[in-house]
Every structure is written in C-alpha cells, then in structure tokens.
Amino acid sequence: MSLYYVQKFLYQLNRDERVQREYAADRRAALGDYELTDTEVEALVAPDIGLLFHLGVNGQILMHFAALHQIPWGDYLQLMRDGIAEHGPVREGVYAMTGYEGVDAHAAALGQTSNATDGGGNLGAVADDRAAAGDREGERP
Image (tube, rainbow, N blue to C red; front, side):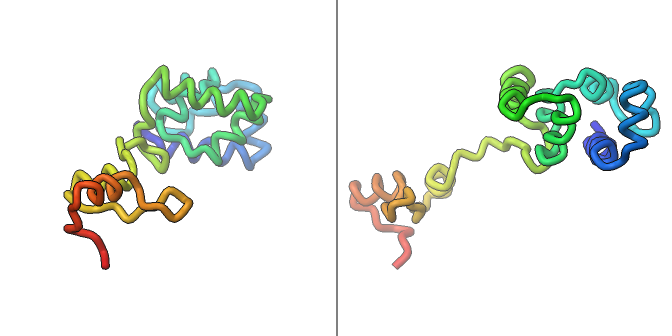
C-alpha cells in the first residue's frame, strides 16, 4: 500500500486548481503520476470515503476530498463508520486501530493499578476492583 502517495495526491488536489481541473476531466488519468495500488485508484476514482479511511487516509485531508464531491458532513462521518464496518479497522497511519482498550485494561494487563479517573475525580474501574479486594500493590502514594 502507498498511503503516502494517496495522501500526497489528496493534499495536492485540495490545494491546486490545476490538479482539480485534471481530476474533474479524467479522475483515473489525474492519478497517473502517483504510485498507487489498484485498490487505491478505485477508491479515489469512485470516490470511496470509507475505503480511503480504512486504508489510513488522514481525516483532515479526507474531509476536503469529501467536500470536493459535495458529500455533506454528516454523510462523510457515516461513510467513515461504514468503511470500518465493511472493510475492518484502519490499517495504518495516524488513525490505525491497534486494539487498545483503555488505561484500565492496559494497567490490568501489566498487573498495575490504574490511576485514571472518570472525569469526576473518581479512580477508574481497575483501581476500584483492587481496592475492594484489599490489594494496594502498585498504587502510587
């Protein structure tokens, strides 16, 4: 996969009127100078917002691409959700989905106590469970 080239193309498309004209005239031909996979080309030609998001395209770049195609904001967000449902987790890039389940789960996996709070100053679930069990090991003073 060539996420760099997909994002480079989208960045230039978002900023350069010449690239916009070329893309409007012939989407496939406008992609000719970029090292893209067949899947990436098809997603850019379609346009397939969900697949592009799944491939790892940055949402800040992708939202301008959606706007170019007159996709309303709410529909854009739903297309990203649909892309995850259809194609699976984001594969790479800043939005890559790693399976991280949060601070409490991470602390428990390491055998530590979480000092995360619920926003109201209350310690998270792992700390509550350990405190209830009388286990103070790993707590910060």
